[in-house]
Image (tube, rainbow, N blue to C red; front, side):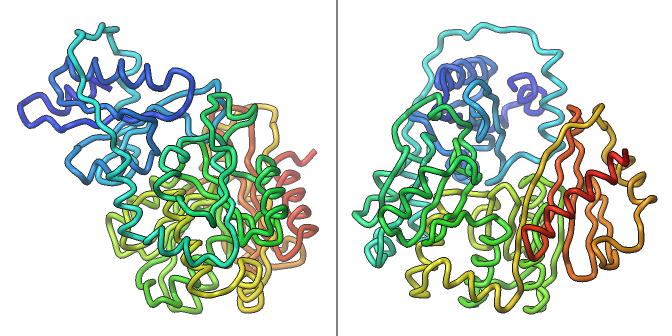
Length: 435
C-alpha cells in the first residue's frame, strides 16, 4: 500500500490517509502497523481510535481524506483478514485495486520508524452523516412496535449507542466477539436464526442484520420471514417512488431479480445491470444520474447519499418507511406481489471438476448449446457481463458464475415458486455438467 501511494504521489501533493479497522483479532494492530509504515513514507495518516464501520471510512474520503483504508475481511470467517481501499466516498475502482495488488510481490518489508500516529474518534462524524439523512431519534420514537437489530458481533455495534439509542430498538449479538459466535458474520438466512427468533419473541415490527463491517444489510419481516435482496430492493424502490425521490436510472448487479426491473419499467425509468460487486454500481452512481443501486449480497444505495452501501443507513431508511407508511413489512410486500408478481430467489454453489479461469469463454460455450425453450418458456435474453445469465419471456432467470480461482460454480435463479426455482437451478447444473 505504501509503495503504491509513494509511486502515485511522489511530490508534495500527498493525500491525507485515514485508517480504520473492524473487530477482528489483531485488526487494530495491523491498522496501527500500516499507519506507521505509510507515515514513514511521508504521508499524513490518522488512525481511528476505535473499530469503525466501513461506510464511515468511505465518508472520510469526502471529508478531507484523499484515501481511506479499512483493515477488515467483511462478512468472511474470523480466521480471514484483509483491507478495503476507499476513494471519493466509495470503494476504489478495480483499476486502482489491481495496481495495488501488483505491488504485493514487489514489496520490500519495512519496519515502522516509531513516529507517533495521530488518533481520532471518527464515529461522531459518521453518526452526524446518518442523522443528516434520516433523523434517527425522531423516527425511532414513532415506531409502533419494537425493531430488532442483529449486529452479528460486528463493528456496526460501535455506533449502536448513538444511532440506535431508543427503547423501541432491541439489540442482539452486540458484544465484541472476534470469533463472531462461531459463524461468519454474513447476513444470510442460514446465519439469522437468532434474529428470526427475537422478531417472533418480541412481536417486532421487523428485524435487521448488519454484516461484520456494517456495509451489508438483511431484513426479516414482522412474520419472521427472511426477505431476500430480490424482495427487499423492490420494497425500498417502491417507497422511494412514492416519495417522488426516484428520478434517474435503476442499476443492479446481474445477480439481482426481476421485481426491480418491473418497477423500473412501470415507472418509465432506465434500467441497467452490472457485473457482481458494489464497486461497479458505485462507478455508475458517480458517472451518471442513478436513482437507486442494489446488489444481491445486501448492498443498497440511493440518490442523495454516498455512492456506497451502508447497513446502518439502510436500517434507518426501512424504519422511516415503516413509520411513514404505517404498514408492516409483510403488508408492504404483499402489495408488491399483487402489483409486480412473486419472487422466489435461491442461490446455490456447487463444486465442479476444475476451475474455470475465463468466465466469458465459459458463458459463450454454454450459450451455444442452449435450447430455444427452458421450463417451457422462450429464452429472450442472454447476458455475459459476469458469467451467463439466461432470461425467459416471463422474466424468470438463472445466472451461472464460475469462481475463477477455485473449482466452484455459483448459480442463482428467480421464478414465481420455490419448486420452479429449484428446477431452474437443476437445469443450470445439467448445462454445465451434462453427464
